[in-house]
Length: 219
Image (cartoon, rainbow, N blue to C red; front, side, top):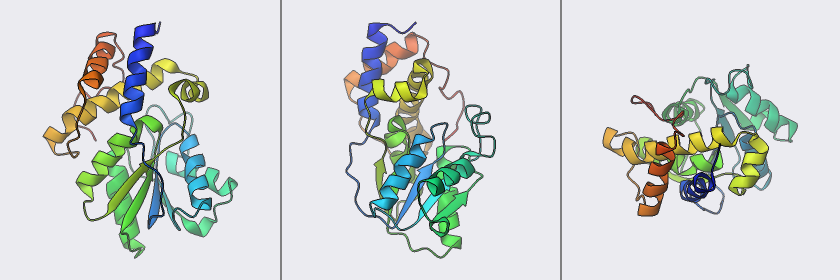
């Protein structure tokens, strides 16, 4: 059961985990694989708004996506953006990444192999992964500029699309944990975590929203 306090704390995390950046044209877009096909929808919309001339879709599978996306996250993302009118020649597929660090590293390698000059990257992710994606990318690829963008939704609106509030809150707690802890492991840049965010996070951990927390070093 999700209490009023749980939900209030989740909304604090929801706001913090987003970067609140405005999209602007970049060299390339990278859509980070996940269980949420809405990420592909946002990426296609950004392409049609001329925010990038080339899109990389990246992701293999995870326990959350293996049933929803049996052909792999990147493959399903590609199929979706093609349905939405993105030309096939404007989409590169990176099908191996199993975490955010690999999303960035493998996409970078793919673009290098394709001889694409990259000065800026528009990252497209789930709303609560914006800050984590940005912090990871800045650590691993510091020679380019990054923007981190997602669907513009409230927490309630997003949960209604996923139909699993517990999963969403678990995911947010996991993202917050990584933002707090991974800079010490050299996996992300360090970002300020306001006190109210830390308090909300600790309350959600105490309330057992812990299914997506990292037990070991994973990106």
